[in-house]
Length: 88
Image (tube, rainbow, N blue to C red; front, side, top):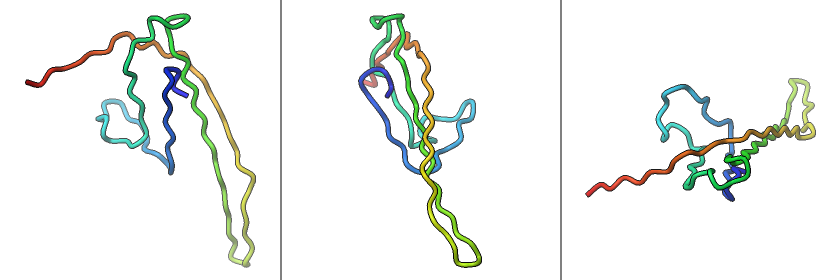
């Protein structure tokens, strides 16, 4: 939950974030389209959940799946300004 009524679901291992990386470098992202100034506390509450699904195999023929592990964390995000750029 991105706190602004939007949301993003990402599949796969993701792309490790690095300072200065361009927006197109990851397929898992969200763009805020309005300021959080009108919200309680002036922020959106961003909540991220990661689910680990684990399967395993053995050289002796065994294998299986483990119960999924889910972790969630939240953070208040201040979105101060939204800009539009005219190209013509």
